[in-house]
Image (cartoon, rainbow, N blue to C red; front, side, top):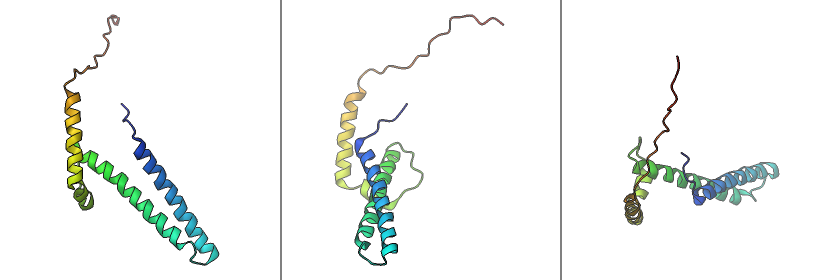
Amino acid sequence: MMKKMKITRIFTFCLSVYFLSVFFEAGRLLAYEKTFIHLGISLFSGFMFILSLLVIGYWVYSEEKEKNNLKVKFGLYEWFYNLPINVIARSKAMKQSHNVSGLPRQHFVPPRNDKEVVA
């Protein structure tokens, strides 16, 4: 079963790849031109790359925490997870998921093999 991909997560991943390439390009220009003209771009793109990785990491952390499958607690993610705005958002999501859980579920039943096996 393939997990449903969210467009915000794909977009954040693409941004992280873009900012990493900008960071290396600005570093290359700094070394080649031997000036500090591109230092601001390098610092900004490095910061945005790290920020996007932290966001992606938080999404993974929160999903694992909701599944009770967390191996190691990370202080920054715990603090953000327990913020009041996140608690409210999670409670709204739980209310919506409880409405869906009342629907009948279809279970997968493998097809029977009625052919006799001749040995």
